[in-house]
Image (cartoon, rainbow, N blue to C red; front, side, top):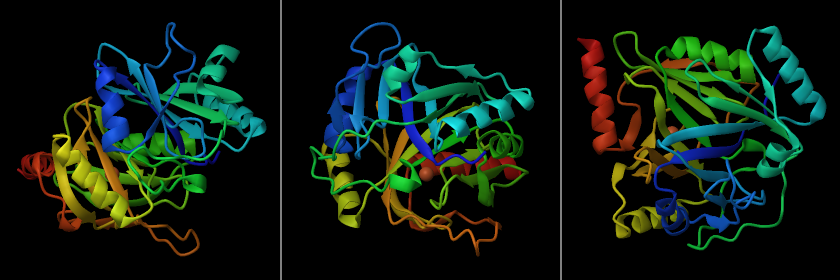
Length: 305
Ligand SMILES: [Fe+2]
């Protein structure tokens, strides 16, 4: 099985109303009607960032974190093959009913849980309903054949989770980072985007560390950096550039407490020539300072002892 990238993200939120101004005014996404309107399981709000009818949904919940991640497949036969392979591997898979497919606006959907319990969805046939127009003037987001961005999940054992995701979603390791004391960060791709999923076992509690949206231009990133600060949203990592994916980005705290990375100019992998490497050091070429980086540095020092 080979997935076509991260198609959508669902977020659990104790304060969905706070996501509205954050999504539109800070990130520059356009809010679209929730579907289905009201009812159990319906999102409180949804956002669009390209021609797809939505990419980010916020659900009212008792907790803040990842509700689900949707991974795209090319069609019905690919979904049937994926379900058969997952079940052959002993993974429990649930086939979505027509109501859930309609809510997600896809033609077909199946779900399973990863090793930590995160809900992963496989889908095909997403609805595209017209061009994106940012209420904050973002020129656009890099999606298309690269998917909508990436996720960083903290897990108890990065190597084990990496093996799981390579098997379950057909992801490929792009590179990995030595975080000291046997702790690591593993970066996995589904498309030529450097990574669609990153995993680290540096932190003690499994959670969503951040998700990433990639804007088209550096000006989009700079303007979003200004908007985040003007809105008083905490900058968890200042503007900087990662060593491995070359992304120029900053991180801002979402209403859920975790961060969103807003970047541009991420690395595109040439499948014909790419070789998996391991890297160390700070992980950055320049910048990327702030409380979330200090938390990483503290855990790395602890791991080294
Ligand atoms: Fe990231």
